[in-house]
Length: 235
Image (cartoon, rainbow, N blue to C red):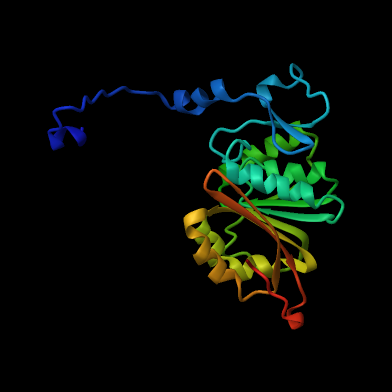
């Protein structure tokens, strides 16, 4: 309706009413099984029992309002970084878990102590359902604003697939959640915002281990050093 006020002679405006259920299910028609990492594949929940990978470990995913099917580059890149560190972490924190897909990747990589948090109670509900269907009910969940979370413990591996702005605001918090000599992996960094991200993280005791890129997005794996080592390296 607002477009019609611009009087654009070469633009045709068509209005079609869609029911809420149409928005929530329309995308599923294009959601097919795919390889997420070298060893893990994603299968839509409605194909569970009907589709089997030959070699890849399956993760079954359903989502209504939660982000994280694994199709987006930010999720895929971060999942690959988690798998890269397999065998080097037991405790794992997924910040902004969405569907819970990255927490389940950690589980497939033999993490025994996994926690998933999200500010949205709806996302946590979806994640819990996915955990149950994937026999990952041991994963702990919590509805929480990561900006306000109090650091009561540290983890071997912390991952956060959130916006660049949130990563910048939470830099100190995320770093504080990681045990010395262990890992922080972040994604959701747009290439054009990398300089701002780098400037925010250069002050923390983090050494860059790996940077991956895809579709104008970046994911970065850090290893945390003892602060007194002053070994901060971010290319």
